[in-house]
Length: 249
Ligand SMILES: O=c1ccn([C@@H]2O[C@H](COP(=O)(O)OP(=O)(O)O[C@H]3O[C@H](CO)[C@@H](O)[C@H](O)[C@H]3O)[C@@H](O)[C@H]2O)c(=O)[nH]1
Ligand SMILES: O=C(O)[C@H](O)COP(=O)(O)O
Image (cartoon, rainbow, N blue to C red; front, side, top):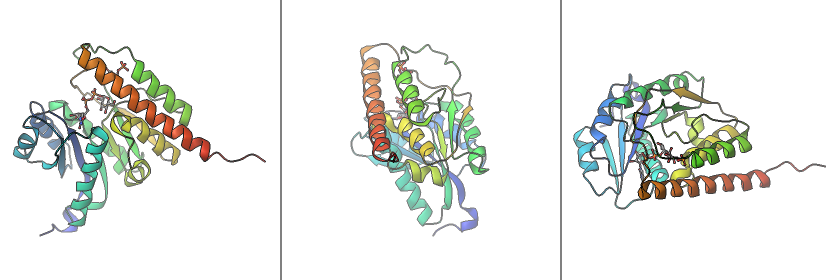
């Protein structure tokens, strides 16, 4: 039976997860400590480990991809489940969504700082910025630089951490940002689309700690995929901007 609408929650947590069995339970416990949290949806994006079983055991709603589709599709599947929960009255029809990576463990609680400005109507999209991490990363800033310069070129706004995936979106921001750019282009595409819709974006410092990408060949392959997806998301939006440019007389 659907729960009464008065108990419907004002925001839903969506956690995309690929092979996160070692971290997902701690991350779910972390977000459960956020004030006002209701439904927590974990999307197991074709994991080869026990991510789905562990997440279900920790009390999350679990959506499973039979094979790996990439982060953007995992987030879209989470939104699909959120719509289902709205239809049965378990989630408020005008609920916000909070995207949280699966590898934050206990620090995930700090993502709660993103919710207030969106529920209060002060921002449509809030994005977490992270402090220096305990382990040094192995990147040279190529992907981050591409993303930051691209967003600035297309919108005039220069984000501190353009790739950060911890984000809270109002219903208006969700409408402007979906369907998402594919794979690792999701954050850059979302930021550009929300700003171009005339909505407000705000970066919020959060004391978050995650698994940093290292220096081995797998890490460099990961960065190459990030670079490709960010470049594609920007190229599509550049074209869109050209097509919709007002013609001068
Ligand atoms: O095919 C995949 C790969 C990853 N994930 C999940 O997506 C999240 C982010 O993945 P991760 O490997 O931790 O990404 P990072 O290398 O840390 O990437 C950074 O940059 C990405 C954009 O390139 C953002 O999405 C991330 O939030 C940001 O932390 C995690 O929960 C993963 O389990 C999927 O759902 N499907
Ligand atoms: O390690 C990182 O911060 C990301 O994979 C991005 O890589 P980058 O340092 O090349 O921007």
